[in-house]
Amino acid sequence: METHASFPETLGGFAVLLLVLAALRVFARSSRLPAESWILITGLLYGLTVKSFPSLPILELSPDLVILLLLPALIFSSARELSPQHLKAEGRPILLFATVGVVCTLFLIGVPLYAVTVLPLGDALLFAAAVAATDPSAVSAIFQRFHVPHRLAALIEGESLFNDGTAILLFFTMASLVIGMETFSLTDTALTFGWMVLVAVLLGSALGWCAGRLIRYWSVQNQFSGISITLALVYGGFLVAEELLHVSGVITVMFAAWMFVFQRRPTASEDTNPVPPIAGHPEFFVGFWDYISQLAGGILFFALGVTVGRHDFPFTWLIPGSIAVLLIARMLVIYGGSLLLKLSKDQVPMAWQHVLVLGGLRGAVSVALLLMLPEDYIYREYMLCLALVLCLYTLVIHPLILQAFLKRQNLEQQG
Image (tube, rainbow, N blue to C red; front, side, top):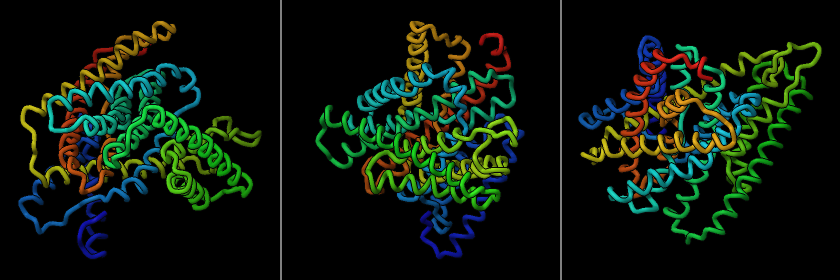
């Protein structure tokens, strides 16, 4: 976090930020909008204030801090929540929306933006890859207020988790081609993509299994040791993948989380419900990673608002245009994909499809990817401003429409 201030001032600013994030989450309990919406709006207002009063502290996130500190925590926190039973039940819809759907979204958003903005085609596809990732956190908060089928919740969470991995791989591939100015070869790109995924899956699974075995071997019964092992798993695994093997750290962390959490089998002396492999302290494990996820997401949303608020907004008619492109792309992926699923007799009820469209919010991962772009990248501020438009729309308008829709529907009967 670069604030161009002394360490005591930086630490004090971070303490104030923690209080602001805490207050906004308390306020959001009685609001129709999720906390993420208010955090983004507050960051934007603070950025506008800094623009008028330059002496105020400036909040900026360096690309290294985002990619090495915040992104791995977000991925691990999301991956640990996906139930293998729900994944098995909704496997085909999840994989279709999170693979083919993300690739389609790449072009459904990137090509129109190339046609109507200053972005070259490669840069427009780079931006589209970032915003192809969806975030279920705000939707999950809304679901807690209604009776929503477990299958539908699992479908949204599973799609979000898998499309995070796909979108991030596409983003880094496009970044290497656009920013790194590498020569494009479809065959080489496909082979590199496949190799990165394969090695990352094997590495993550092996690391997650080893971490779980280590906790069992050491008979870990205290919070410090158990959480320390998970932190080492997340950040050590990410660094080994990215810096040593040059494969996807995101996929590595994702599979490490699954293997770590799902390998636990209750023994005769334990409860019959599966728990994370931190013996005796599953509640602390869940609570710790929930906090880390909310903190990382809050910092990212606030930083996006501040960054955009400090700069001139370069859009006029492009604001509604970009929203229309995003919405049309989401509708084509969900409604079109659901038609294809009928061929394999996987029915996604129409009401569920509407929820999937409205639940395709753009969140922390999209923000993190764009904040990773080098500060001297010519289109960085332009993309961040465009991302703010899409995040504000999906985090402010969609939750209101979704809640109104859920009040009128009995989704349980349509499952």
